[in-house]
Length: 393
Image (cartoon, rainbow, N blue to C red):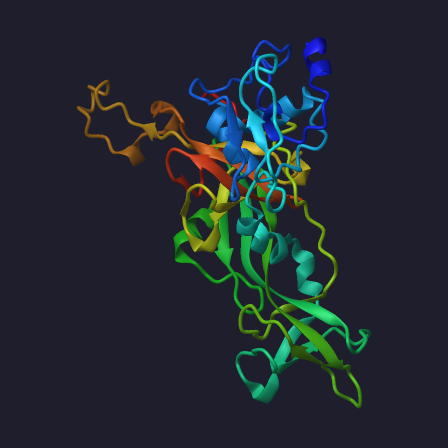
């Protein structure tokens, strides 16, 4: 292997010299190329590293391991349209550099997750102490571009400073149970940030928990940007802000934070979870745009975060949780007439979980994270279980 790498130490910045490692390479037995791969592939505009790996690897999330075994690839993040990828054994096919066009491609399409990187965040109860919109010009119900809004809590801020306006939208919670699986739910919030009563979850919330209720966080959505034009002067108890860049109409109760650089990753190296979590704890708790199901390139919110060892790039497989079914064939005494509700879980038959797809985390908070569904064989739904990407069942 050393001789092979020595012969290939040419200034090549191509991706799958990377994808072209021999399957016999020590330590990479788990990395398998698909049998129908061509000898070479030319990177095209619109490709992503995951898509390319998905065409040629049976398990595309393993492509970083191939890069690490090929030191001639100086920077695996800088792969360009026009680069030629060798997909044959390294000792049989040379690698060529093609004419590059456009910008470097990423692991996932940033354009599809950019709103979630810039416009969404998850906070704890501390969001309630943030400054907030208390009124709008001419006592209107909503504020738009060019109008002014009035805020409390900005007495010490300077004129000319820019602020983001955030709206608390959902409260995510988990009911920790020992009998079976944790219960997760999402609740809508009103303009004060209080939970809107929902009869659908009333009885769920009334269950006495075994361990206790845990707040996962409040989703805060960016609804606009405003500039402070006047502080609290002359006995006025509210600051004045001009709405410069609204995403949605501003309303009373929207929270206000300074416009600071929000660092987030532009490149992602996929990897399995760094630690295991007990079954039932990691679930899909929401799908973007208020949907209950999602497919490839849809964003999901999950109930695991930094405190669970999750970071950006963590890959999960998604599974429909197997049902507990009454065995009506074996239940001869009751002749199959017993209802599901009349049989305890311990007396039911546990059916297998069903694989749905893979997702990769791209933004992590303390107890939650956002992930992008990378591939799927069936729609992923709220409540689906998160497992190791190579989980067999």
